Length: 380
Ligand SMILES: Cc1cc2nc3c(=O)[nH]c(=O)nc-3n(C[C@H](O)[C@H](O)[C@H](O)COP(=O)(O)OP(=O)(O)OC[C@H]3O[C@@H](n4cnc5c(N)ncnc54)[C@H](O)[C@@H]3O)c2cc1C
Image 1 (cartoon, protein in one colour):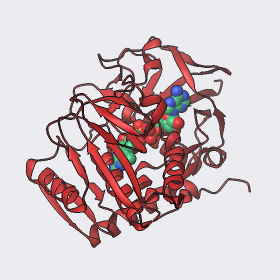
Image 2: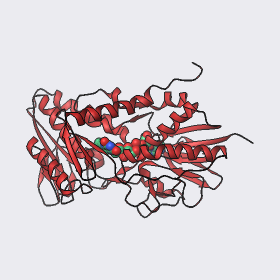
Image 3: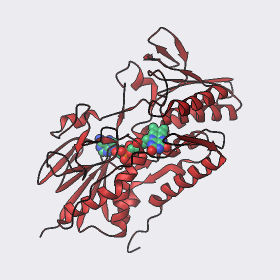
Image 4: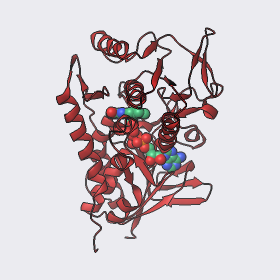
């Protein structure tokens, strides 16, 4: 039998684990990873870097060394379309195409509202993560400017990520001995819609105590170079605007003949295979899992799916063994860095906070990143 090729598209959380497992126990297949960036930034640690608590190294996973350890080939390219049938497929990029017998998508998501005027020109997006460094650089310029007494920021999108970033920005600007004018905006009537009211109120109180202005029911009409204009006519000063609205499917997926749901996410069955039987698998933010509409788009769920996808890709490409089903847990622990050496732990209806939660988060996050940074290369 000829050796088959596994084509991994996107260097997201799930494919990191597929590669780590391939490094430990090689696949009987050639593996190619195509990703638009040579490195992956671990989002759980972005607020800590913004605050200056860790350096870029603490959240960066280089894909080249990881591929070498897994004996995979790395191709830096942005996929613009995928074509596939039941026997294999091809990823199309501006610099050339790459085919595979088994394709797997872990390309994450884009953000909602990119068509709002001024967003692509003036706001810093948190997705895709490779844009992250530009945000950090802009903040460093602002706080490094001695002539500035006040630094104003708007964070658009009050999910967990937005809340953490607003708190981190406030803490960093204050630590730099500037006045922090930080606003957090959301179009919804309250932040953290998926959390129960009591926990959301606790977070609102925290933002209030820290001096961060929370604007709910706030729809952004336009982002300008130094301000954000709202639909109701108000304008908020913003020398730095962070756009961290909810996840939206990549537009290029719609150009591909794949089974997508109405929002453009790849529809997969419980084995994480495309529902229409094409040789395409997927996991992480980019999928819609059949019969599980409640599945949140968060790193925790991507991490849960990773061992299942790794196993099923091995079965598919080696043509032996039995595929497993992914059963996402109904609840997942959220640890929110409150930028004061503490964190809030949220689980179902339980919320508690303190230094212990921050240490716990720091420990888990550090362990996660190091797991992919320190893989030995076989034969060296
Ligand atoms: C500030 C912030 C904080 C967060 N904190 C947490 C947290 O504490 N806990 C949590 O569970 N979740 C958190 N999240 C959410 C989490 O980041 C995402 O859910 C998670 O990254 C999704 O993982 P993924 O594997 O689907 O994709 P990603 O990690 O986004 O990876 C996608 C990969 O695909 C590549 N790619 C994208 N497009 C293409 C293309 N066209 N061609 C080739 N490659 C491509 C990218 O370069 C990237 O390597 C946070 C998000 C943000 C923004």
